[in-house]
Length: 183
Image (tube, rainbow, N blue to C red):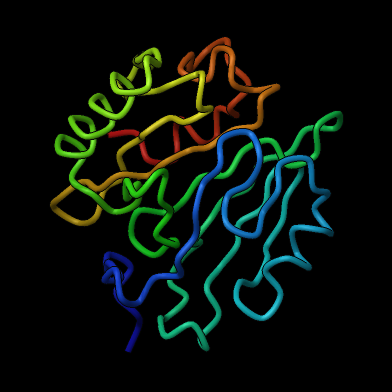
């Protein structure tokens, strides 16, 4: 019997990570090489790579069937690790100042995110696809299909990629990210 590709991990089943803008996402520090990323997640996440990006899969010991990537990491030749996208279905629960970013209802998260930005006098932008974003945090809140619903899929970027992170055509976030879970 095959694993359910639409299965969504509960918060209790997810790894717990924090996001510090332009510094780190859980154990992943912006600027790391691919080899350093592999070492940082060894024993928890397996890695499948390609040119310029890598998918990190949950290992069976994490309590979930590895039905797809938990995280996608993006690299560039000058900045090393420059982007981290967390899978809405099976990725770690990443928090920013207590705000849960992964696997949430997009409308509720957008409201909470907007309030968070206003409280810190930060700018709200939207991508061409309607994804809320803050270039001052290097954070784009995308949506990802989970069978008949959509859930939040955050993309966090290094400072070098922050300007224009909302811009699907001119920004640094690879086209692969914008098209993978497009509705």
